[in-house]
Image (cartoon, rainbow, N blue to C red):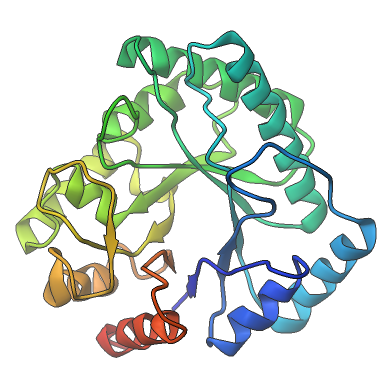
Length: 281
């Protein structure tokens, strides 16, 4: 099973590998820079080299890098839109240097415009990004959202529309966040609801494009739109719901990354161990 967590890069970016290994992970997700700020500096060449060495040394693969939160590829603001595209290109080029396999991204907010306008801007932005980074091997994964406010991606028809509009579809796939899906109204706490969602994904974008699952329980009720994660089995999806997702035959070869609360030093280990106990080998 490919199983990991969102790992801190405090200190040096390559320190994340030791932290992941200490937790028994064989994959991981990181922020390559501060997720709440625009880029302040690029990684030092020596740190990039050490990252590549440790990636092989610790056997952590694939590596997922989550795009910073400030980036909004659906923004109607001309300056934010252009700055987001430029930052995204820089992040992919740096991810290529690190030999990370995937960039994970939210689909952005259309703000005071419309979903249609936001999806069009997002598609145009991705076409520019894919063209400017065509010599890289880094794939982009579009994450589903909880459906709050003006955020795109709360239904998989959004993903289909964007992917259909891309000139180069080969480097774009899907990241499924289980908490977001439940909070957006997909009742994956039930067997029937899980099947309905997976069938929708397959018919709209294709399950073959699903490369990553953010395995999170949901703190709030079905369809609330409130993006709050909970520990595995402690939320509204529950232990049985989590168990069905982890062991579903269509998902067994997909990477799982936990973004569960880090409210204690033991939280990551507790959640990882719970997932391992739920997994039927």
